[in-house]
Amino acid sequence: MDHDRLNSDIIAALLCQFQVHISDICDKHEIPPTALIDRFEKVNARFDNLVNVNETGLIFHTKHGH
Image 1 (tube, one colour):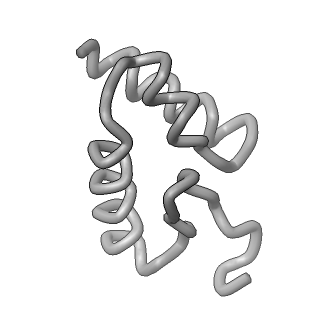
Image 2 (cartoon, rainbow, N blue to C red; image 1 turned 60 degrees about the vertical axis):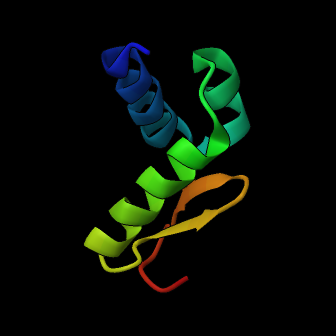
């Protein structure tokens, strides 16, 4: 797995769409969904639940708490 390309695709999705669809990233990089879910949950915990993480992906809240 090319971690630089993976990170680049995640960052691009966040900057352009404020969300990352797990299936899109996993299909493109041939990784299991659990790898991203675990990663996103760690990010969410680190940033005081600023994002919503579920089985479909990661979504930034446009306003904290909403």
